[in-house]
Length: 304
Image (cartoon, rainbow, N blue to C red; front, side, top):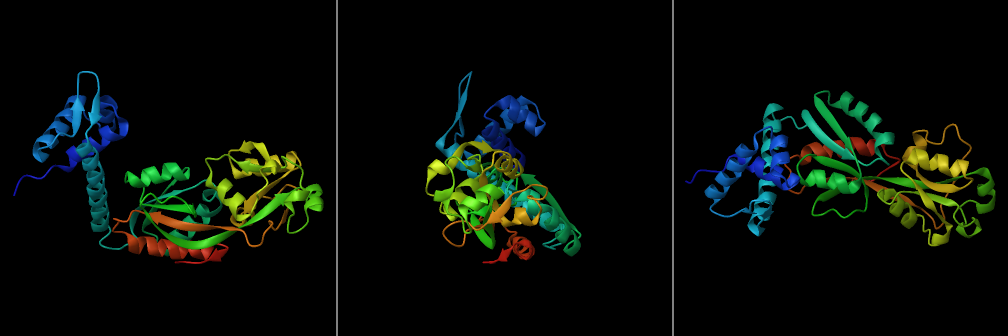
């Protein structure tokens, strides 16, 4: 049997692919640049294929190099899961669990979720990263996160999902606007540019506009907010309206202001909340228990 590549050399290759610079990759691996370069050359010799095209100023990953990077990422992720499994003595709810969550869910759910998990599984170490959907999916792909809590639907990029519940949308608006709009709201009665939304980086904007059947784009104000808290303040101070998920309302996001809530136009409006994970993961039992706990905390549980 031929000698197998070392995990260290595979990690060097992944670092170089991520940073696209030998010096930065070496710093990320806490080794010298020459050590990292030698490790990758050794990997090429063991695999008997060229992974990188080099000249004195630049480099380029070959087609085979790109394929090896993807396979190396799976190997390193699986190895890390193996170590965690062994350290927890096979208990699926022990040890570290790296969870990614979007900003329109995290502030309203993660606190109570963490408390509940600590009560149920005191040996589980929850490590949380909050970021946009696109960035979280990149971190999941790179093996830096184990599972994501996202609003659905999204482009899963080959990952798998479990839907754990629904989060209804309400329209929050000033009392003056509420008198105009009615309940459920009639968008045609609202002034143009009176509806405020989040920046496009937040998937809640697309989910809300779609679920609430807002077809008249003239009603949308061109100025956007970076967070739900800012969005609520903007709607109140500028005598407007916006869409707010029920979990944020339950968490008190409308406390201290004069906004009132009405039902969106067009019937039931909601976003689905789900767990997203790599299809190659060995931690499905852990994620299933996480999904069950999460479903208990959502306005409408629909675990599937």
